[in-house]
Length: 115
Length: 115
Image 1 (cartoon, rainbow over the protein chains, first blue to last red):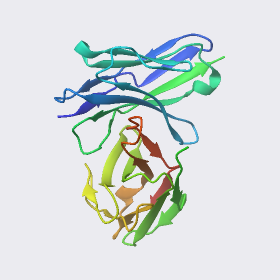
Image 2 (cartoon, rainbow over the protein chains, first blue to last red):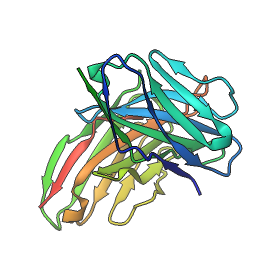
Image 3 (cartoon, one colour):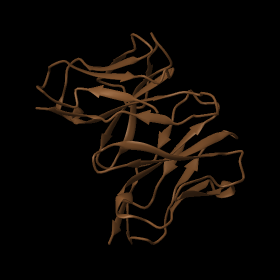
Image 4 (cartoon, rainbow over the protein chains, first blue to last red):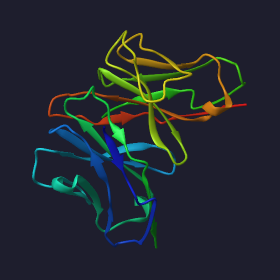
């Protein structure tokens, strides 16, 4: 069965530092896609970054990057040089290539960036 | 960029009343989704659709119906609203477009309170 688990419910960091948010997933499909979304305080949910399972290189977009460890079924989100506006809830998600276009979400990690 | 809108943004309903939440997307995506978000549960899938005329049950469909009359519009219907359906509802659209874009794009959410 498909499952996405985020064990960190809340993380607090000082701005300009680097933070890593953990995510592990379960799937029986050999091909899948992994996503990270950000939900701001206003409730808006925004797509951040995607990792395709067949790609060995870690995806990077701006100051977001991923740590994809396929043997461990792990996809960590790394935010470098954090800013106050990075404070949000971050959701990890997975879609199997042979699925019916469904995406499975984790329960989210609350990130607080302090001055 | 993706554009998903929802109406109403806020709704107060009475127990036993009928509630219709509407979603419109201008992305020409085939797939649309309805989620609810409650504290501590992340995003849970209620119904989804592959295209006009189709609806599929998600993980928590009981008490909800869905309607997809066109490519652009997807509605969530609560025939007999109950207080347990008080939540924030998100609509999303997604597709396997050119370049392998498999992520979903979310609307701003509808806050529903059932008294």
